Length: 194
Image 1: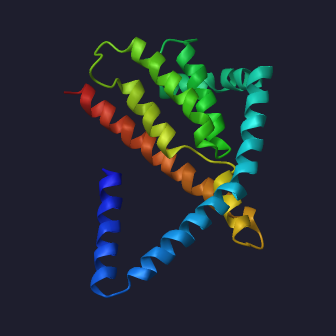
Image 2 (image 1 turned 180 degrees about the vertical axis):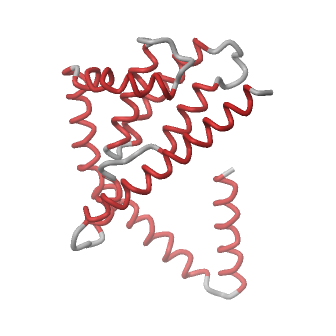
Image 3 (image 1 turned 90 degrees about the vertical axis):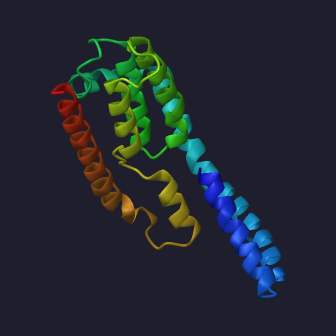
């Protein structure tokens, strides 16, 4: 759906530039934005590689697993339908931890594996279970302690203090997580009463 919307907007821009006789401007912008995208990639890549490397070291050393165990009592309350000690809880905790440092791309493998394990617990294979829905809400709205990508972009564009966004990002993502989990809980309770 998003690709259709973007395609439609691009088509409108090309048609508009053609009707206003500014087709050369489209060519200039395509070349300039391509160069800018490549520059952005090379600016952000080192920071993402650094954090992904640190997360891999934490995973290989067992640190993520220890942190996941510390999170398990909280996750047991958020996911009451998942049996205690189930592998999916560790994967969910790992996903949350990696998302907290702003590395959504590095968290994806943990998230996919967690969903796979949650599907094994699901009685209705063609419908998402409440635990799967809660995990999706938690993953989408997840608390971010260090917004790595945003800090990289701010540094790339010459911000005097690229990391000043940390407190704002923390408050915004904390609010979205609380709101998302609250709504999820209300809907789950409403569906139980039916």
